[in-house]
Amino acid sequence: MIYIFYALDEVTYELIEGIIKEFYRLLKNDGRLVIKEPKRKGDGMPAEEIENLMSQQGFYKKTAIQDKDTFTAEYRK
Image (cartoon, rainbow, N blue to C red):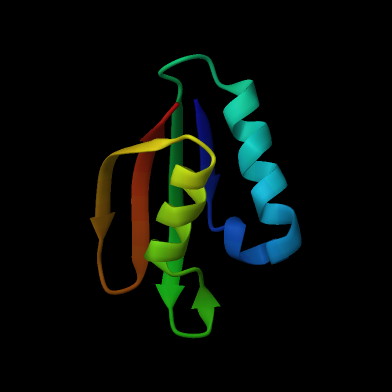
């Protein structure tokens, strides 16, 4: 299991895809990746962008919760 809390939005966009690929490589089949990111304007990453990145790298969304300030999701390999 890999947990990411308030970190993706701190990484340059050029590096994010490689980081997500590495997470996928490290996880066993059905391994879990849990992400919590801010989604406030000017601070954070849009939920749609996170979902696109995850699906492009082969992850599928198990659960997701959004409130006014955060996006939390569990993805599986």
